[in-house]
Amino acid sequence: MTYEQPAGPQTSAASAPVMPGWNVLAIIGFIVSVLGMPVVGIVLAAVGLGQIRRTGERGRGLAIAGIIVGSVVVLAYIALGIFLLVGLLIVSSSSGDALALIAG
Image 1 (cartoon, rainbow, N blue to C red):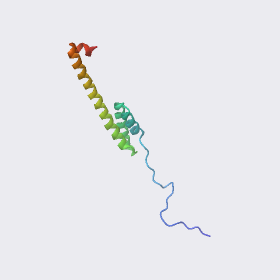
Image 2: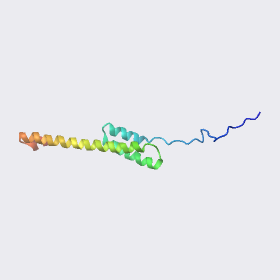
Image 3: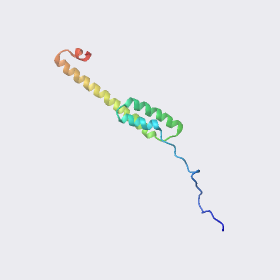
Image 4: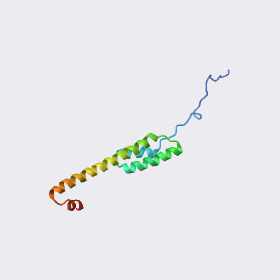
């Protein structure tokens, strides 16, 4: 009795294409940017993006999103700081001594 191979392409686990892994720095950079440490997130995501270009790993979208989210959060922090500073100046100008209030 002879065993015949079925017709069609022969594939095995050894010949299956291997998907590249995810870049850890891109993932961490995105998460850190979302959680409120945007500068750290931007740096990690940018380093991850550079690694992705060299290694072909997955996570390019996460790295770009981490940079964008981090940038938006930094701009929001700056806008909030300016808003609070202007409010402080308005309140202190009505009391008379704005520079003494800012200087402490």
